[in-house]
Amino acid sequence: MGVNEHFEPIFNAVMRQLKGFKIASQRGSIAIGLRSILVLSVVFLAYTANAQLSQRHPHNGLLRPYHAAPPDVALSSDERQQLKMGEPVYTRVDAAGDMRPAVVFRVAAPPAVIWSVINDFAAYPKWIEGLADAEVYRSDGADVFVRFQIRRWFIGSITYYAHHTYPFPDVDWGTWKLDYSRNSDFDDTVGFWRVLPVAGQLQSSDVTYSAQVQLKGWFAGLLNRMLVKDTLRQISTWIKTQSELRAMKVSEKKYTVQHSSREQR
Image (cartoon, rainbow, N blue to C red; front, side):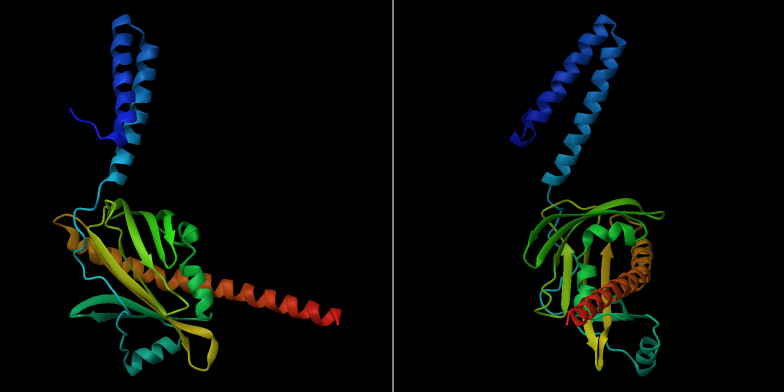
């Protein structure tokens, strides 16, 4: 039986605990036997976690990713009026013939503030219902790799690893796909953000968010639609709320600094 060098210490620990459990059983020591079982369980969980991290995803992508600027979302005159009135617009975007769900909504904050919220991954679990954890495990310039753990009543607990490319302020968009070097519970996912300033309104932006998710299993189709619908609904709420709160804090800070400066004069 061959053992990968990466797991050899864990494997040896398992073997020692199994041996200890056998000896304890022979001697009739319940306490030692229970301790051996407990340690063995912990070691096994560590082995499983490390094994998951060491495994690649079964493929390198099923959904077409965005390699450059994502497509624009065309809105009708009625939809533009809806956007102007502060209502989110749920629509679809044409990604090379693949019609993907999207939402467009207006936020009373400049693009820089909105992107600061989008990039604040550590705060996501506080803002997003059903998101249990978000951990940045690698960052390289505009490329940010994040482990997400979500919990929804209709899909249970799911862990996936996402590779984000957010080159703001060089461009007004950012994209993501799975990190295929790690094994995710999602079969695949791709998506994008676009944040554009509203003409003539320095403190307002129009935000577009699109996501496509593919779960595993024969029943995935219905669950895909439920998950994306729920995600789009939440996005148009928490991004707007957190960005506008952060914009207010920035404005208050600027006012305090300016006011103090005038008093000193």
